[in-house]
Length: 171
Ligand code: DQA
Image 1 (cartoon, protein in one colour):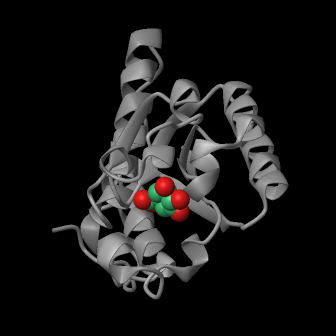
Image 2 (image 1 turned 120 degrees about the vertical axis):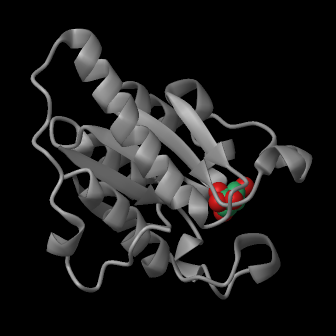
């Protein structure tokens, strides 16, 4: 099983960009922790960051038939990108919308998400922890759907000591 984590515009600046809002961790650190959560369930994770709307749409297309779930922090494209909305609508896996901050508690232009109607759920306002929670949610929603369909149970996750040494343990 596989999850694709997508990061939109300006998230490459995490750690340096408005640390009071987005925290001091770099994107790579969030991705490492998200990948460790995926691995703890026997899943793999790939990550792609872009500042380009079209490239983000292409990345959703690339996830079709390849990823069981997409976790997407679309940055400001969350509030504007109907092409991203349509791409996510055309993707038939689980979609989890992710934000470090809580857009609903911020400026009015952030109160609308065009990603939300194409997503199964939302993780927001949890800071960096949200990356782990969003992957956990994606894995468990996929598991619940497989159960409803009556699929065979997934292979057991590797033992913790089998995880790569550079993966940080879960709290
Ligand atoms: C964000 C929230 C968006 O409103 C903003 O444009 C971002 C980051 C978040 O993670 O909190 O770039 O998606």
